[in-house]
Length: 158
Image 1: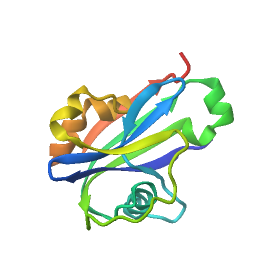
Image 2: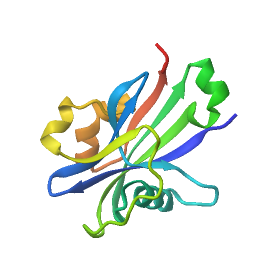
Image 3: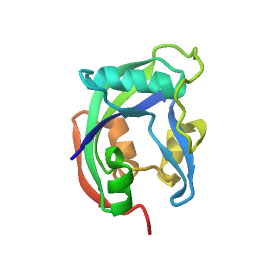
Image 4: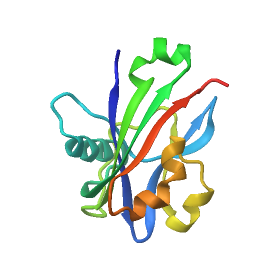
């Protein structure tokens, strides 16, 4: 059994948040937070900084750990063929840019089609996955304490 730890960042700059846009044949267009899987012997803070640099080209500073959630995929196909993505624990950090200078991203996901700075006012109208993060996005932005978003059982294939 594999449970994957994922470190995600809500990167805020000038009242905008950086999101990754995806186009998936099953899920359609949606957005996610930058970040990804934790490597063995790597702290969550190290993971989120590395992943954000790899995916966006931005170096970030961590402001605060703001949330956690668990996603368990019910699809047998995903469980068998992509076991590292079938059960994830998302650790969510609020962050800011160390500098507005960027380097070229070195690891862009195959289904990613864009990287966009979105005004915080527009977030409520956006499809952000996983759903538990999207539904609580503004709460996470404003959080003073850690928010437990709970566990979700999801189906990818409809």
